[in-house]
Length: 468
Image (cartoon, rainbow, N blue to C red; front, side, top):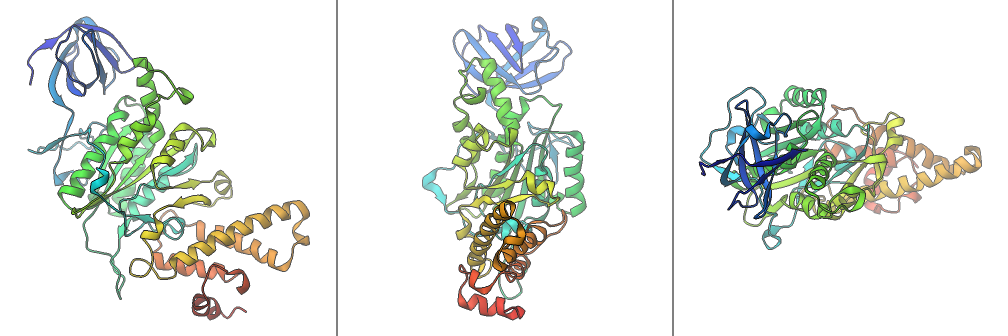
């Protein structure tokens, strides 16, 4: 570690500190900054040349007196101390405790700027993760090793949905008794730019539900320096990689909100003078997001896995905004929240038609969920899409002009939204409950309309209700 300190700061703004006449500094090096009051701040080199070194300061550059600010280059990357004792703890964006307990002391520390999983070493994502939410488990199934984002608009309850997933997510072992599996399961929760009340809600929610001991929390508050949001996802994934590939655990990582991350990246890119692209975001936003998302997955000959659910808010509900747009290219599906369903008091307001899980087929079926799962899901999608067409027709010609079958579709749509989509914030449904509920709702339709189901399915479930 270098013992040399420099006092050659040129300027400071927006979380960036520029230094002149500093030789031999490498990109990504960790930096310790001591201000005129003796307080220490952490930084990282993001640009290095013979003329100038640019440092991002995670605690921000407010109140720095440049003439009395000392900077030490530590000649080492930014690292996170790792230990099993991280479970049940709450940290800030750079991995420092914010729960009042001692810091993690460990001989194992790793560079947080880890690499994406080598495609040649990847194992294909398989096996079902139960979230307890019918619209996800039944129709957009989450699979171990998958990247499945949640797309939400401003004011929609994406944080409550994220907390519900963390509380209820579990692995299952399937057999005659359908009991919860014994495999090690952990969760990493990373929140960026959340309010104090939201942070308190998350912690109390996890504690009351009894899952806090399985969760590692990384929290960046709205009044914390935005620059800290750039390191937080990488810190969280470094922790997840340790739990998954060192300890052999199956890890679910929930990140909210990646739009705040991207906005912090835009702020720093502007300060560096990078050429802006769409909506002022830097041209490397795609590769930067890919560096984060592609650290999730499974590795051949490794027991553990990392499954990622990033929450992405869409400014003005615009799904073509650069952050959700690029996220959709990198990930394997999306869960889309609907403002119309929210207005109808349906919680969680998941809009099933634009939602999808591209890896669903590899996590369902006999031995994982149930043999009829894929067909039931397909029938729900087809029937609800038809019901939406009937609703549009009814708005034009009036409901009294509809046929009997069309009126049955309207009843199906109402039951589907009120009973299947809508569920209590603390209602944890098993996949078997979800599929049985789907059959009850499908039985509102005439037998001839169930074209995605087999005769065996209909005989076993549909006719058993006594409906003709």
